[in-house]
Length: 365
Image (cartoon, rainbow, N blue to C red):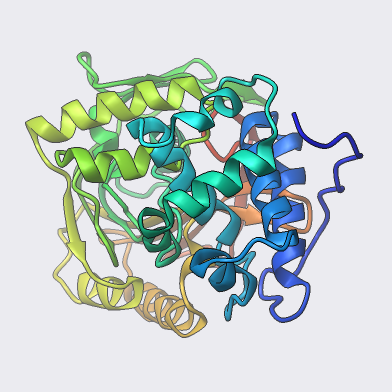
C-alpha cells in the first residue's frame, strides 16, 4: 500500500466550500471519513486518486476534477471518481485494480494513474452526476418513524412519498420485514429482513400498513437493467459485502414488480404530490435519506414551503409527516428526524442512525 504518513483527521468542513484548495480538502476529508468508518479499501482508492491529482499527471478527467467549479464536498466529487473506478473493477475492465480491492499491497497512485489514463472516456461520465447510494437498510428508520407516528395517534396507514429515490429500493419498504429492538414489523414472506443493532428503548409496537409508495429522482435507475444496476453497485463500498447481497435481493424484487418512480426534481414532485387528494384515514409521509445535501437550495426552500403550507391544512383524518435520515456534520453522524401536522410541526429527533442502517440509537423513548 502506497504511503505511510498519518491520515488527515476527519473534521467539520463547510459543505459549500469551493475555490482554491477545496478539491484537495474534499479528498482528504473523504479519506479520513472512510478510515473512521472502517472502509479501508475505499480510503485507499480515494487516497490514490488524491495522489494522482497532486502529481504532474495530465488529462481531461484530472483537469476537470482539479478545476471543479462547484463545491466538491457537497457534490461528493471524490466518490464520483471512486465509483467510476469501482465499476471498472466490478466489470473486469481494469484488472490491474484487483490488488487494491482485494486489500493486497500495490502502488496505489501508480495503478490508479494508469487506469485513469487508459479508461478516461469511460470515467468522464461519472463526473456528470452525484453518487446514488440506494441502501435498503435505511428503510428501517422510516418504519421506526411510522411506529412513533402511530403511537401519537396518526393513522397507521401510510402513503409514502420519497425524493431522491434513485432505483426505488426504499420504496419497496412494505415488502421488507424488520426487527427493531424486538419490535417486529412486516410481511411473513419478506424480500429481505433487517435487524439493525438497536441501542436504547424499542420503538412503539403498532400494526402499520404501507398503502402506497411513490418516489422521484432526477435520473431514476432501473434495477432490471444490468448496466444501471452495475452503476448502483459501483457506489457500494467494497467493504460492505452485505449491501451487495441486499442489492441483489432488491433487483430480484424489482424484476417481479417495479417500484413507482418518476423522473422529476424534488420540488416539482413534492408540490405535485401534495396537490393530489389525500385519502381519509391515511397519513401522507414525505421521506428521504442522505439526499437533502444534493437538493439545490432553491428546491429545498420550495419543498419546505410546500410541506408547511400543506401542514397548515392537515387534519387528524388526513395528517402529514416529514421523515428524514440526513447527516449532521457538526457531529459527523446521521440522525432520524420527524415533523408532523397537525400538532407538533417543529422537528423532533428520534434517533441517531448508521448511514447504511447497521445500527440505531433510539432517543425517542
